[in-house]
Structure formats: structure tokens, C-alpha cells
Image 1 (cartoon, helix red, strand yellow):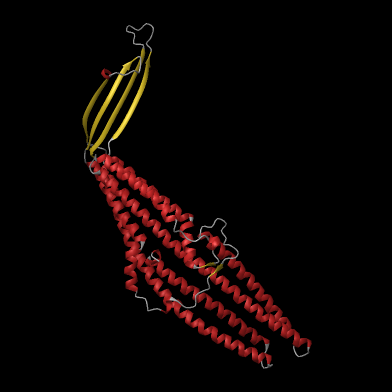
Image 2: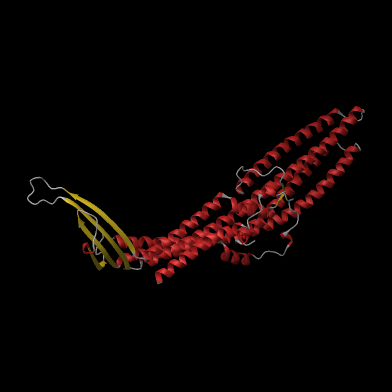
Length: 444
């Protein structure tokens, strides 16, 4: 009855496992082809569902799950059937002729009663391995979500730089048109015309570089999202780069963030499972010091000349086998010593991961603080350089200053605008890093 009930439970669990993926698939991310504007959250959702590396890690979870089932099988009896046909043909001058065919058939069952707790530790090890695989999948998603954010912000930065280059080109084109008009009227110099032609060409070259960077960033983001063609639809646009957001909230408390990270980080959970798996390996190694006790039963039959077995052809047997290794050259002791060293290694690795988590959180907090200050500084710098450029432009039009100073003022404005984009992207990336290093990006 126990065996039958357990089989029914397994069948029910297998049916549930088969249904869950189909149910989960109904709530997947919106198809990329139906999107007009791609925001960061949607890009991350598409990546998590379509990136091949995540799918590979999920397949490793299934492998670990099947290893658990393999270890569970050791608790059940092993049933084997065998049959054979033996043909014997004696020599012509044999004293006793024994020519003919012999048919043998057997059915045997073996149940391990005791194996020094090896089965228990093997099953524990497999279960901890499955837990570690699940944690590894979560950690892969955590890192992928952050990588998508980095790539997304890089693409947004490239779009902003394209806009800055277009604005710079348009500004110099207007100056060129006015310089040509003044030159024709005899009120301007040819050198000013040539200067603005050079500035237009320089802006065009900068635009080409920005467009190349945009194409590279676009390909990188598409690849992370798991798109087959490694490209996004041509009519798809990105959400605008944020100019205000979470950096205007209350200051971060580093120790609270560290506590959160130590609770949520999946790589810590994975390392903890590795420690428990290593502890199970010590138990497996020590099982070599204990005897193995097995119960064996067999039903076997043998018949000459034909395979039409009858009841009298069969016999049965049952027995208990006790096996204890008395000497193996120190192999068992060496296995135990090796397993204990592996357990110490796993514990040290866990300590190292915990230290790394704390370090990453502290670094991320510092990055946010620095990036926030840079944004405020660059916003002020852009406002000042734009005001300065406009004043220099008025002086240039009034003939009070030369074109060199106007070039310098425009270059300063373009540089400041680019610096502001970089600062905003750095701040947004720093916030995503905080979410990543604390593990909270998995709970969004």
C-alpha cells in the first residue's frame, strides 16, 4: 500500500509540474513586435524569458531534479529478470553424451536494508544540489537584469548623443548660413565661412560616430533580450532618459541594504547549499566504514530441450547478505579526509561570497552618492555654458568678439550636454546596481 501511495503521489506531482509551465507561459511579456515604446522593465522581462543562458540554467535545474529522483530510487527494491539459452554439443568420442539445449529463466529482487546511511546522504546531497541550481538560476537572472539595464542606458545615452550632435550641426549650419550672407554683403570674412563649414563637418563626423555607437548598443541589447536577429524592430523607440527619479528620495542606509542583500542574494543561498552538499559528501564517504546489508530473493527455473516451463522447473530462494570491507589500503579514510577538506573549502567560499556582497553594496552606495553629485553639478554646468554661449553669440553678432571665442563657447556647451547625459546614465546605472547587489531586482 505504501509503494502504491507513493507512486500515486509521484504521478500527481509530475502532472502538476507538467501543467505549471503552461500556466506560467500565459502571463509572459508582451511580444516585441507589438511594442511601439520599449521601457526598461519590458526589456528586462523579455530578456529573462528569452535569453538562452537563462534557459540553459533552467535546464540544469531539471537535471538536478532528476538526480534527486535517481537517489530516491535507491530506497526501492531492484527487480531484475533474465533468460538464457545454452547449447551444448559434446565431442564424438565423449564417454557421456550431453548434447542439447538448456533454457534458464530467473526473476530476482534486491532491497538494501542498510548501507551506512549512504542513501540518506546521497539523497540530501542531491536535494541540496537542486536547491543550489535554483539559486544559480536566480543569480543568473539577477545579473542578466542588471546587464540589460546597463545596455539599455547605453542605448539611451547613444540616442541622447545623436540628438546633441544633430543640435550642434544645426547650430553651426545656421551660423554658416549667416556668415555666408554677411560675406556676400561684404560685412563678414571668408575665414568665418570656412570656420563654420569645418564646424558643420566636424559635427557631422561626431554624428556618424554617435550613430555607430547607437547601432552597436542596439545590437547588444537585442542579443541580451534573446532576439533571433539580434536587432530591434525599426519603428520601436525607447522611453526617454529619466531626468528625475529615485535619487531625490531619502538617503540610503548602508547597513540596512547589507542586511537585505545577505537575506536576498541568491549566490549566497547557492554557496550555503554547496556547504550543505559538502557536509553530505562527508557522510557519504564515512559510510564506507559501515557494513552493507541487503535482502535478496530469487525465483529461477531451468529446463532441458524446450522452453515450456512447468511449475516443477522453478525454485525460489531468499537470503540476507552482509558485506563489510575490512581493508582497502586506506581508501575510505582518504575519501573522508578529502570530503572534509572540500567541506572546509565550501565554508570558506561562503564566507568569501558574504564579504563580496558587503563590499559590492558599500561600493554601490558610494557610486550613487558620487553620481548624484555629478548630475547636480552637470545640470548647473549646462545652464551656465548655455548662458555663456548665448552671450558670446550676441557679442559675435555685434562684432565685439571673434569666431574663435564662439567656437569655444559652443564646444563647451556640447561637452557639458554630453557630460550631463553621462552623469544621468551613471546615476541610473548606479541605482540598478543597488537593486542588483541587494537582490531586490528579483522582486520588482
